[in-house]
Image 1 (cartoon, rainbow, N blue to C red):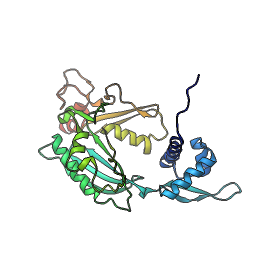
Image 2: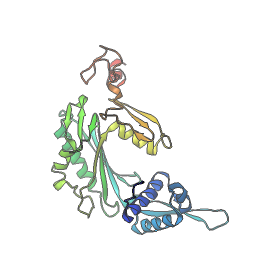
Image 3: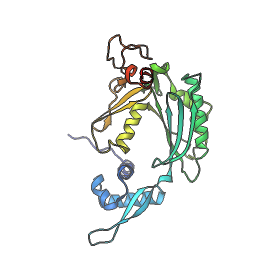
Image 4: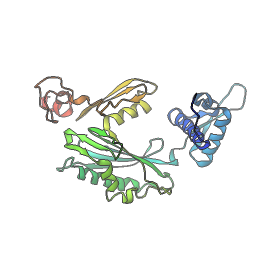
Length: 295
């Protein structure tokens, strides 16, 4: 006997809204007529969802296109200034924090150099706090509320079921650093909430932490050369070397979240010394430091 569908009317409404927003975010602007076959929803459902989202300011009109003999079709798109996002990149030489509108237009940026303290975890957290304070000062009614913060870091990111993200980064000296807990508990986030976030719901702002190469790969699949592809490998070659493996349209992490840690694949047993402590790693041959040293 088949199981019962336990979804409520609220669940169905949220699902329909998500389907419409996803299509418009990645493929818009689109007309209501185009949205129906693209989402699999009925024209009535599309009309209801679009009307709600337009009234809430999440969508906006984006002109019109001609139709075959009928009235012009009005195009819809996600309103860029209905909300904002923060991205944090913990790099080799600096910590960059940027505030974006919902369509990833840059609103504000702060860069903090990594000095003699290097990648000491507490020092990096202080730099992230400083950058967040600077960019969140630009959050106001014109930007909309802060939806979330994403942090890209070097190394393997573990997401245990009973706690926040842990970061394992050999090259920067991090061993199971509880970065999510450190950010939540830091002075920059009183009560686990972000100051000047523009949120009125009292909820904590979502905080997402991931490997930098994998976040780059996801962005490439969404907005770059990988759009429309289901399987791809996106390589990141800089001071460090990494990759994002995408299969079936989703980034592949592997059993231990280490898939794509390409830079520390051993090419030559007993070869050139790598900063991770091993010898013969790919990074020791093609990483920026190795290339500058040899040429």
